[in-house]
Amino acid sequence: MFNTRGAVSSPSLISVDERNKRLVVNGYPLGTKPSLFSRELIDLAVTKELEKIWLWALPRDVPKFVKCGFHIEGNIFRYDYEEFAVSLAYYVFKARGLSDKIQKENDIVYTVRTEPIKQSQSLPIGMELKILDETFARQISQVLTQVFVSYPSPMESSQYIRSLMHNGNIFAGAFSQEKLIGVAAAYPDYLFNRCEMTDCATIEEYRGHSLSERLLGILEHEVQKHGSFILYTLARAQSFGMNRVFYKLGYRYQGRLINNCHIAGSFEDMNLWVR
Image 1 (tube, rainbow, N blue to C red):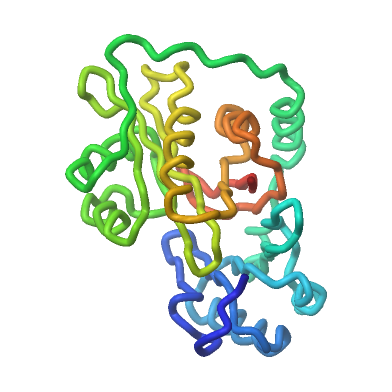
Image 2: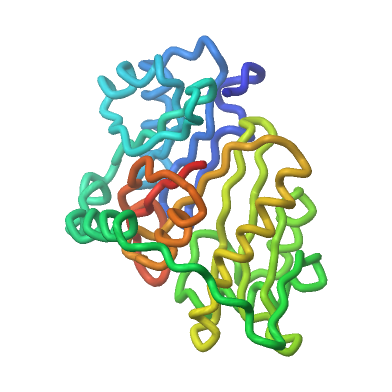
């Protein structure tokens, strides 16, 4: 599942995410020594004044990373375990690894899994769903900035959204009388054969019509045209609605990333759901 080419410091695998004060490591070449690699990552994070290292690791390397101070927070796998990656975290700033909302978030996951699932109703007249192209970048930005006080990526920039589309990421939108009222996105990753389902947002007055669920369905169908991906998402652990959406769509809860990103005004825990 991991890249076997390039240097350990490959910029395509390691990114300094100053917006979320974290170092993101999407993988490493086979043969990498976890002890040496850990020291390099920690030194880089300290130099850049980052608070967290988020590392996707091969299962066989996990015990060695744990010895170096990393913690297991989640995993991505299929039922057959043929493709498997473990999400690890190292907290340079120890307080970043502490959350006082764990019990509340556990209760949400329990309720999400146990409440009866209701069938979605038909869309109201005048609402429609469709795949979006770059001409909608400004409107996508407006929806996301209206729904979220802060966001992990620079969605306030229409140019950034256009760049995402140019790189093969897919956006879908919900419209009411030709006004964009909801969005969702799929980020296919061909290197690791996985696709993040993300950027779900619906303007408050238009909620209650299962728009995120419907948009994700459209995106999943679109993604299938490009290959067989592991689908996953990081849902705000305090959001019953979004966790419920992914459970309803057949995703499995596979971990929680503590204070993983800055969203809706503060750092929040994110639940990992996988299908």
